[in-house]
Amino acid sequence: MGSGANNIKDIRMVPTEENDIRGSILSASHPHSGSGMDALTDSFWFNTNEVELMLDNSTRWCAKIAQHKPLIMQTIRDWYNEYFIGRFRGKYNPWSVSSFIESLCLLLNQSDAEPCVDEIVKSAARPYWVTTGTTGLIEAQIDKHGPQFIRLAKRLLRNYEVAKLTKNTSQRLRESLHVPLISTRLNLISMEQFSEPGLLTLCLFAGYLTRRHSTSVCIPNHEVYQVWLALFARAVMGTEMADNSTNYERGALLSELWQGKTDILCSLAISSHGVLSNHNKFLEKDYANHFANTILAVSRFGMLSHPQQQLVRLAHVVPIRENHSGLGKCDYIMLLYSTDNQPNQLGVVIEFKLITKDKRRDCKYHMERAQEAIKQIADRDYNTCLIGCLERIDIGVAIGNNVAYAIPKLYRRKTVDKPWSEVNSLVKRRC
Image (spheres, helix red, strand yellow):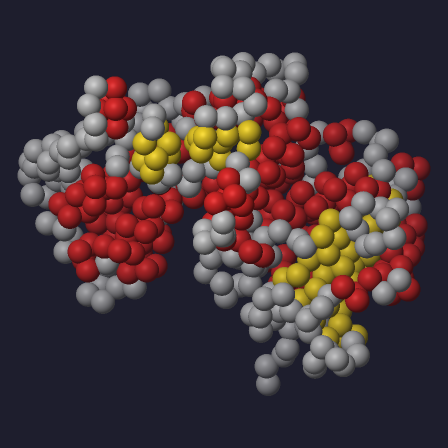
């Protein structure tokens, strides 16, 4: 784990050739805070003043930087900031920042006279440092302790997403979104027994987490968030399916559901890593929970985003309810974007029915179980919780060991006080 010496970049403090973007981004040092140990600690990684100085100096090769400095600086904060080193908060990853500025200068200089700067900045903002190494030790923990890792990764990802959406909320709420380390001592990990403090400590020292207090950690920025997204998807779906999910077009799953199709949904439902594909003792709720984790993973890659959206909206990547079977409620509910790009106006209700081991090859039985699930949604009025929705999809899913069969039913209504009408497709045909 780590990058060794393959990510060394020479950022000179004295300018060289005028066209040497990489070698002379930074032309002067900035005095560090304090003295003694503080001065030494603050010498690690960049602070805000140093990043702004890099941007100012880069304008000699790309004048467009100066015109859009606030946007660029905010992008750098979102992607590469928030590390806590010593007593200094808000440190920036130097490799990523310098790589980003270098790429941005090249892209802007290659663009037309009136470029869409927002789009260019977005394209330049991507993982740099995290691609110089591997996450082998973390992946070994996934292979040995998948369920425990999934629970931990869900907390870290959700905490990061909530923190980004609640920047103006109380300090108490923000502090509650950090995962405790339990011990400030070095916690060693074991391949045989899962240790959450050990894994957190490993990720902290490797740069995949940062401190907020002496005994709590969190995901620092969007670059590292991308790493945890990939790790979570790998833990839930396995390497191959996780890689494939990133290749789908934006909104692929949502677009398919609008048309009353469930091919992708069933593929995701039976995707698994380890336990669900190798054993036959799991219950309906185990498959439902696995499906929920899978949907959480792919939604963060944009598969449930509206195709017209440029970004994944963090407010809508997590379903509003996951229920365990036997509680008298449906298994799964999502509030998504309607076909006309309105948030929370498409409600999806999913009910699972188990396919037992001896019925895995009985296609007629699979259909009957899915029909039983779709009938239960209607009989028990599970859709009453979809307040404010104008479009609705009920899905009955029969699921078992490496097999899934789904039946969807689509509905639309003109206003929230009107009755639902069943339709063949939610996508309106253009004349």
